Amino acid sequence: MTDVRVPETDPFESAAPERGGRGPASPATGSFGTGDWLKWAWRQLTSMRIALVLLFLLALGSVPGSILPQEGTDAAGVQQYFTSHPSLAPLLSHLGLFDVFGAPWFASIYLLLFVSLVGCVVPRTFRLAGSTRTLPPQAPRNLARLPASAEYGTALSPAQAAEVAARVLSGHGFRLRRPAPTLPAGSAAPAGPAGSAAPTGPAGSGYWVSAEKGYLREVGNLLFHLALLGVLVAIALGGLFGYKADRLLVQGTSFADTPTDLDEFYPGRLVTAADLPPFSITLNTFDASYITSGAQRGQPNSFDAQISYTASPGGPVRTDRLEVNRPLSVDGAKVYLIGHGYAPEFKVTDARGQVVFDGAQPFISGTTGNFLSQGVLKVTGAEPEQLGFSGVFVPTAVDVNGTLESVFPAADNPVVSLIAYAGNLGMNSGPAQSVYQMDTAGMKQLTAAPQLLQIGQSLKLPDGQGTITFTGYQQWVSLAVTHDPGQLPALICGMAALGGLLLSFVVRRRRVFVRASTGPQGTTVHVGGLARTDASGAFEDEFASLAAELRSAHQQAAQDPSAQDPPAQAQAAQDQAAQDETAQDCTAQDQAARDETAYDQTGQNQAAQDRPAQDQTGQNQTAQSPGQAAPVRHEGE
Image (cartoon, rainbow, N blue to C red; front, side):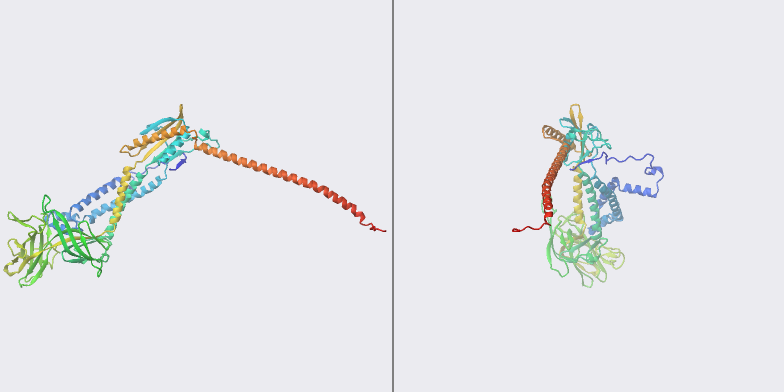
């Protein structure tokens, strides 16, 4: 970590409010305006208390969505709940408990929590960014008052002791703060140990070091809030661009992923029919096995649905196997196997002797267990009157005291019990009807009591109304088709939230202070520390280990004869540099003086040599000048 020396101002200390200044208005003063009430409401909404209350309400509101059948995932279960609880179901439906995650009250809690988190996280993000540049507070005057403290003596000077403590704390990843020398204008630095300046100022005399670590705790706290905000955004993303659909598929039949071919379709706010992937699925076979003996007899052992599908019209046919928690992924959507049951097969002829129905009719299993299933069969094409049948399918039928019960979920002894009706089914007028319920208000009952039929047996209706034959059964599966683009982001944000919680629980924000001062017996080192949150009590052990390491470092530094204050080393280096520079300047000046002297001497000698030569030349020229006019004397003259 960087050892930073700053002026004696504490960034953790806030300025005191000015006396006589106008404080914030409060409701008790009666001076609240509209803007003040809005600010007060915003502060309440973005407080931690309200966020926790909203989070609790969101979790509490999700409980009915996990207990009660939901229209988006189990429409058949909702219809069955209406049948089993005719007085309670309408009240629950009015409260939106069969569509919890789409109810207005749930959306209100969701939006308020979202706004509360945004108002809480954004300011904290700026505060955390600012705290990363904030230095630890000044060392207190009396470190013995802190929760953890230690004191010992050392042969080092106060400056040396502070430097050694700074190196030890920096090696442990602490962020440091040191006092800076504060000198009056125009005054010289007072002599300190080894030539260093003694720090002065409001922090008190002597040398001290403040150290702090554990900033990851705030990072973890902020990460948790950001991740929780990301979860809400991911849920909103799925609600806008995702969709859910249900399809009950009888063995041997197919369906296409279109709104008209789906039993239930719940699109997101921004999803249209054109956004659905154009795949199709055929249920080839379905097999369910159960435990046949022991205490768990009748419990499911495995479910296996063999399917064929095409990703697009005219595309290649692929095969796959659907199992519980093993969905089919096709074109961005996932197809889940969420339920199964029995579909008895019937053949119905009317009074004219014409076959008006021949196929399987899904029955829905009730709450009695062992797949005792109920259902209705509506034959609208029968003449002269429409026919209807209300029945019960029993996979393994046993007569228990005159009551027909199923003792095993597999179809070991399948029978049906039917009650026949004739009249107007009300399909062409009135409110829409469920395929699992029949309105008998406009019909007359043809059989006084339920009629039992085994596979291959027939029931002749009174007055020549026709015949119904129980020809066998098929199995059906319930498929859930989902597309949720926010699923992966929600998973990532959930893992990030867990990581943030772990950081905030494991990391502790702690501070350590060291103060060195000159005492009667030499230098005394005071060490103190405290942790903001230490529920586990681990800081005491950490502080004891750190104090022992500081004492050992001071003892080793005192025993090392080469130990020297870094300020003294720096001063010595500066003095040596100054001496070297002075020596270099003197050498250069001496060389320049010698060069100048030699140059002057050379010039003088040259001048002395040139002067006699010049004089001799002048004399010769003077002597020759008169002879130039005399005649030349030749020999023989």
